[in-house]
Amino acid sequence: MPLPLSRPLAGALLLASLPAIANESQPLDAVVVTATRTAQTADDTLAAVTVITREEIERRQPRDLPQLLSGLPGVDFTVAGGAGKTASLYLRGTESGHVLLLVDGVRMGSATLGQVAWQFIPVDQIERIEVVRGPRSHLYGSDAIGGVVQIFTRRGSEGFRAEARAGAGSHDTRNLSAGISGGADGTRWSLAAAHERTEGFDALKGAEPDRDGYRNTSLSARISHRFSGGAEVEAHLLRAGGKNDYDGSWTNENDFVEQSLGGKFAFSPLDRWRVSLSAGQSRDESKEYLDGAFRDRYETRRTQLGWQNDLTLSERALLTLGLDFLRDAVEGSTDYAEDRRDDRAGFVEYQYLGEGYDFVLGLRHDRYDGFGGHTTGSLDAGLDLPWGLRATAGYGTAFRAPTFNDLYYPYSGNPDLDPEESATWELGLSHGSGAVAWSLRAYRTEVDNLIDWACAVNCDDTDWLNDIWQPSNLRRARIDGLEATARTRLGDWNAAAALTLLDAEDSDTGNELPRRAPRTLRLDLDRDLARWRLGGSFIAQSGRWDDRANTRRIAGYGRVDLHADYALARHWRLSGQVKNLFDQSYESAANYNTAGRELFLSVAYRTE
Image 1 (cartoon, rainbow, N blue to C red):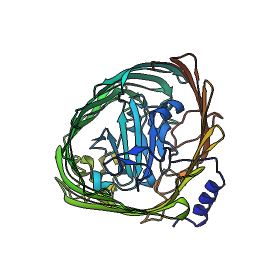
Image 2 (image 1 turned 180 degrees about the vertical axis):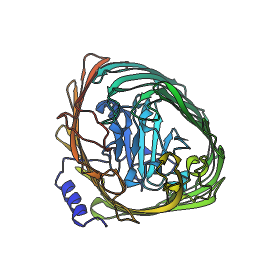
Image 3 (image 1 turned 90 degrees about the vertical axis):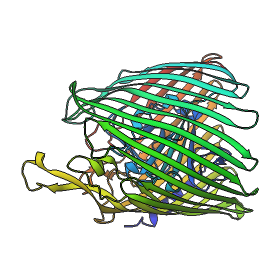
Image 4 (image 1 turned 120 degrees about the vertical axis):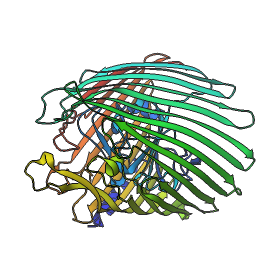
């Protein structure tokens, strides 16, 4: 069923009645690059974008990405246990494999599972995050149906800086991090390392009665140089590796590695022509064990090359042309029928910024080994209205390539699968000036050819171990949504609110898609008071179904998180966080435990 009219109206009225609450999370002059692959201010971009800065990360003190991003517009995370356990991101109600993660422009994720290990990305190494909601396959190809999350690692600035932090908290959690950075004469550099360890808590109810621990050791490095003629070169590295314990009958622990390595060279052959050459490789590795005995090994290598040309046609028009190459290679304890495939793509984008109106038109063609070519496109437009209002409208198509498991898994893969395809329509209205900045965005996404695994051979056999499951393009989905955000300042307090209303439906059965909350509300308050920085967040989600048949219900919940830090001396700060202040018992995935009340304290040193 479509969203009842009362829900969008209730959302709009709620935001209107909270003039002190806000947010898309960024000032309007913040520069974003993910939405168009070129630099824009948040005020100019037509896409729905949320930006999270290093300052916000340090102020809110999240332990992982799900805690940092949960409750932001369109963002819904489920976590199968505590720290380090499988985290799935349903962006705007799309599947967990319908979100593209980039780290400094390098594509991340497993080519066998088709998902991102969000739980292993260390927040200590993050300088900035851009979350772009809505289809972006016309720029990035496969996976960008629900949107794109791009993480930028720590970077240096003029002068020399050093910092270190040590902390401890609930579940025997300990954290150490340190970094140095600097810059001079056009060169910028940064080097940082961190280690986190927790004994955790029992992940799965009614399974192994134990504590499922987690440890993660990470490193990031970046160096860049800007030449006198305007040319720039940079190299960057992010690596995280460690060990994770969980509950399972086939495996219950794994050693993991997540790594991104890349470089870029940009120069201007002519005044109006900017060329960017990029190269990178990501690694997703997992060795899985059962009580210490080896079971499986899976490794993904994703190698990419890019050539982008930005042509300034006039003061108001920018044309971008580019070629991308991506090679996915897998290896491990499972022998796939094919263990490598290439994608060759070309794209074009035209941006026009007129007096009172603007639009962006994009087109891309990808040609994959295994299933041939696929073309996607997008058109977004904006119009300035009286009283400081701005209206936007957009349409975009996107796709997701079948994974190696879908196509080539022994005995089960289906090499005749088609890509999953989507079409999204979106309308928006915003007001970006004055005491209160707010926005409303309504959208509909239809997804066809969804890949579904079902029993195909020996299905009547009572011995389920002999059943053979195979994937096919059988399912369809329709997702209606409304996102309302606002931000303002109440006296000395910065206030923000984000409300997401969602109706995600299996088009074939009429059931709700599992693990998506129909209603999510996030409120944030922060202020500075002399040596103190104080703040808190309230996140509430309505109940949801855990299974596709809509037989297992997960109750809704509300959670309050508080954070504060105090300047002990010129270079020293003491920080503290209380997560789930009122010790609420809730689940985001059925039968998986979540933490109760958690405390974490840390002390940090930083040069100016």
